[in-house]
Length: 106
Image (cartoon, rainbow, N blue to C red; front, side, top):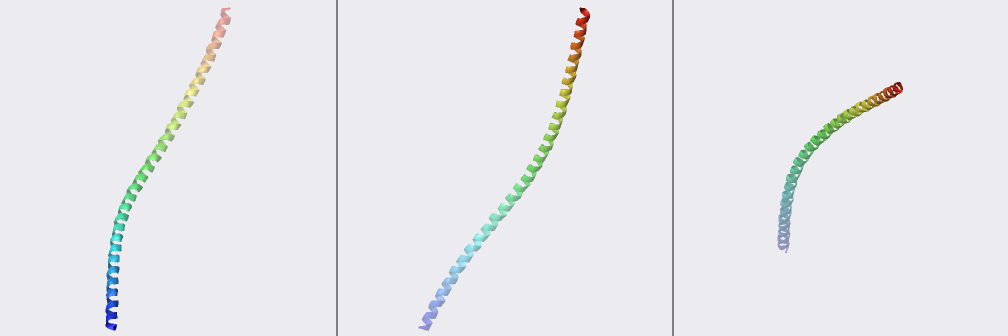
């Protein structure tokens, strides 16, 4: 009876061992798949990081160009306002000369 029980326990242990071995192989395969996926994701993250740096630099350059353009527009606007002021002054002078001319004509 002991021999039969020992064989039964031995068989059960062997079956359990085969079951654990199969589960271990499956876990190892899943682990390898996860490593492959993680490696691909790391490569993609590097690509996206590089693109992000490039876009940040482009954005920074565009901000710089925009600021220069704004400064030039302000300068042009101020120059235009000065020209308008000069024109108004010339019109006032022309009106004054016209008034004098009219008075002298009378």
